[in-house]
Length: 169
Image (tube, rainbow, N blue to C red):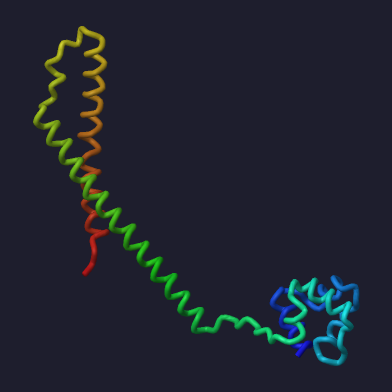
């Protein structure tokens, strides 16, 4: 029982026989003999073993130590299934967010286009002799000029994106 407990605790701590032997100032063969039950450590060494393995002497002497079970194939497949489910949910959420962003972009583009049509380029009637009005008029005209050229592209790309990202039933 002592031999099995020394071996189980050593393995659970991630130590090799060599590493334990170095901590105890003995040769590896001595640790091997203890673990195979061919010899028994004396009381001083037993205390050193418990200190090196950070385990009570009572555990080494009497209590059985269960070796940690390695993950079975079933446990690994369950974990992978959970991970795949989480990734799928994340993908669906990203697709929904992108879908609604594209719808919002379409609505904003149409709203700005409608506002520009209703305003009918009001800056054309402004008095540009005032420098502030001139700068504001040029800025407004530049925005309108750029928007009129870019808006159709934005609208087409957004509409295509909406159809691509729509939820398939």
